[in-house]
Length: 258
Image 1 (cartoon, one colour):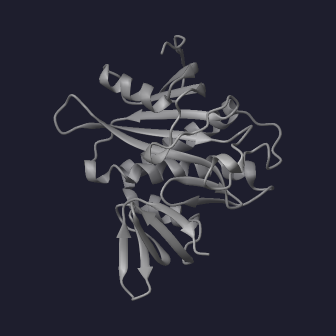
Image 2 (cartoon, rainbow, N blue to C red):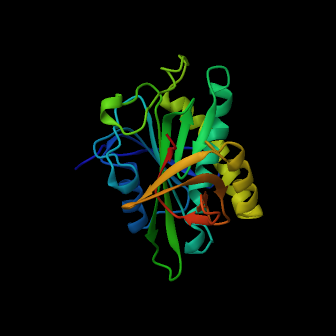
């Protein structure tokens, strides 16, 4: 599909913004840029997506008024550490939104990639990688979706959703959220690069949804039940099973135990 020519905009040093009216997917555009010779620090923002998606290829409803943005970076890390980037991004979103939502509800982070407000899904992160031309290097793409002005009805989603305006925050827009998010992202990314994953992990855990509580995780066709014990040094979920063993999960759908 064709899209209107992006409008470059000044941004924090070493980051550059590409703003579109409509894209199929900001992550897909980031991938195209990576394959076409992009530079580290591209921020791809669209007012609307026609083929937005979440984890496992699930459709992400992308009506205008919400925030759809992808960050394209090439950090000097090993591929095995790439999954940490999801937690870096989630923490940046939380730090940007906490002052905004402080008077209306409690913000929390649900493993592996969701942002919740009072237990309802406010946003999510889709982390993808793309090989780089230089041997041994790769691109990281972090797609961020935040419900600002609207959210899908319960009949269309598996997990209860909300948006900032529904929560009672009236003077807000996707542009305002983006302007708040980017400085926090730059700070969290720099913290990751200079201090490693440990501090990011510790801060993420202070906001972790249902830490220490009974939970069910669906991973593929398998169902696991136990206590959510945190995340390890790679960002894998730690679950203490009923037989006393600790399991490490790299992916799955994490739900409250009923």
